[in-house]
Length: 405
Image (cartoon, rainbow, N blue to C red; front, side):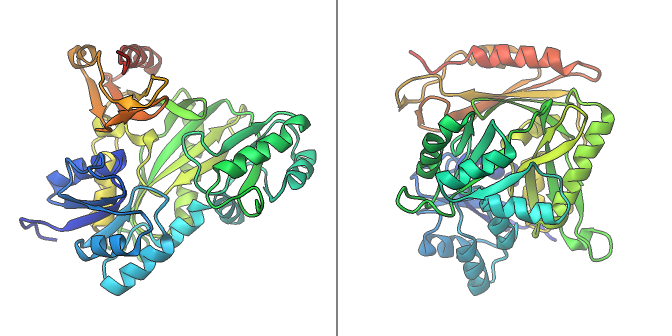
């Protein structure tokens, strides 16, 4: 592949913070980025070459994006796989990951069935199409359990814990309201329930699938980033630490499960693979994202190649980069701390800038509301540093940031 100016163009369906960071990573590679997003002047717009304004599933918008790009990808699961496939065929613009992968992943029930059939360890789960079916499933799985929207849930939206039989009716009504495509009059096809996993910690692995050109034989090149521990509250990712507290053999099992997941996926790119570690070291798959993921943001400063550069490399057919960790690294999400939606003005950032090896990432969102992801802070240690000490430090830096007047 040769470099020219202007270089190849990557079209990204979605112009949020992931699109923004993809554009930041693409520029040094000589790749220009055009995003599509329904929100004018989306977070990615200031750093991308251009934005096409339109819905994620609008045929005209996606076609215009494909016609302007040499490669297509997506940073949000609300992209329509049928539309992506059709536009790719009609324009000749390849899309990665493959739309078939998006079909598998966008529906959590389909995802779990496909992975279970492939031998990937997953929690026990059931399809539920009514409150009555949920009650019957829980007679088998037991209480508590996690009720999930099959489509459309993220950052805790679309996940409802069911603690007792008395919670069933209210929980099912809540999940139908949160699910994509559901209604109270016809709730079929929108929900699933999983056993509540008694996990010791949550882990994540960013998996990478590249081109067959750089792989062995007819197999695509593949790799993983170092295993990361993820810390959630209210079903929202708050902090990450890499390396995790988990023993080396647990990390190897986690990496092995991630590689098994990649065997099921089709198409180039980075995949966010979320895992549970049980008390006995058992690894169970939680969920997959067919794109860069919040649990991999630490790689921007913490690894030789970031997850965003890796995704651009993979989608455009370049060799994958070195996924090695530079040093122990932690990150903390900056979330909205206000009760009412308002213009986003952050204060307290000087302490982050003054701290050596600390890095602030601002997502450029114009409005803030409670628990909205507005940015993140990464703190890179030195060889041999303990991540628990780094985690305490990055939390202090993050907690000094506020959107309050």
